[in-house]
Length: 88
Image (tube, rainbow, N blue to C red; front, side, top):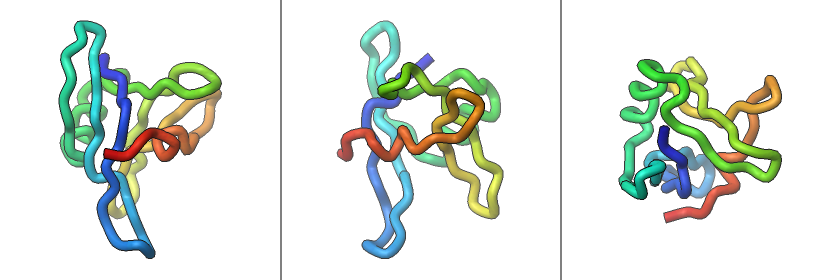
């Protein structure tokens, strides 16, 4: 499992979206994954990425929209916890 620690936003001032996610795992290894690679990773292993939120850890889920994206999920609902992470 990898913990997402920061996000990189892409787009314009009128519409931004997460383009990259920085992560660290339990061994201290770290890296950056693109949104598309994160989506594929989560489709293969739904527990592969998580985010630490004020209410506790949140898993990430793929939202299957016209342009798929990832969103944090906890307590039975989608949350905006990814958007509260630091930017890089």
